[in-house]
Length: 431
Image (cartoon, rainbow, N blue to C red):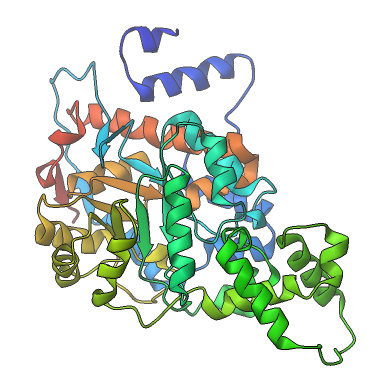
């Protein structure tokens, strides 16, 4: 055990000690330790399509900027001469004690970024004890990802499909895989206007990427087979281009079975067509939540709540938690920033259910600001994906450890020893 661990200095000191000891031997961190440099490095490494999908936002990306500007409107006011030699960064969510107020948010189609995709993220999350929210649009089936996490905490994201039978199947699989909550994503009932993807003509799901939760699902597979059978013989196709051939190969790889067999089968193409037809339901309303509640015993957490009235209505509907989120600025351009919306939602909810924050979180200091404003925890997104693209599992793990380490140090350096001590009184408005 190193000196920092022996004297109880906390995760931040331990992380610093690890980095500086390695530096004596000429070894530097695998990925940059600040988000701006991390993002710059990822821009140089990722393909144009991967970068467009991960970094892009809706419209002119005003909401992406608003999510960050919201953090810039707050300043932390440190206090001194307090004993902060021992600190507790842990929080409790749904009966589980977590090492820090941090989760890894769901990000789809991670195979665009790294070949190990969700598996690398799962292993890194398990190693740090930070929960991973499995994406509904994952590149790896949730059962496989769960197995890689051992006893590590995991949640499941749910996109509400037009097939209730499929929704029910996904819920049962989440329960069987040890997921501890279901994050019902409400802000993507339709795909937002995303110019970076549109200009490239690139939707990963249309090429069979990010649909592993579906192709591994027995209900979805039956729907695909029914669609393929009903389609009958395919009409003559135009002469294929290189891009079209690559797309067909991608679809074939996404469907279970051998690549050679799938290239001759109608099922891979039918799987993509079925997914695009049923993946999300714009018609869902508050009345539908009772049906969802009756189908699972897991806590239901609604993601995408920005208005206090919606938060109140969610409580009336019996949900177990909320995530204030703009979907990383990827759905509605010129939306209110997530952090700007957080205090109103927290006030509306009080202590009745936990409120989490997603969108715009980049650092441990950001996590401290959000928790001071009432968030029980934060969801990290783009930062860990950039770490994945740069260094795989090791990159994800380092990003998580860096964020948690900075949070621990910021907690202590502002004069606090526990997350419960944080409140709006710790902050002041900038300017």
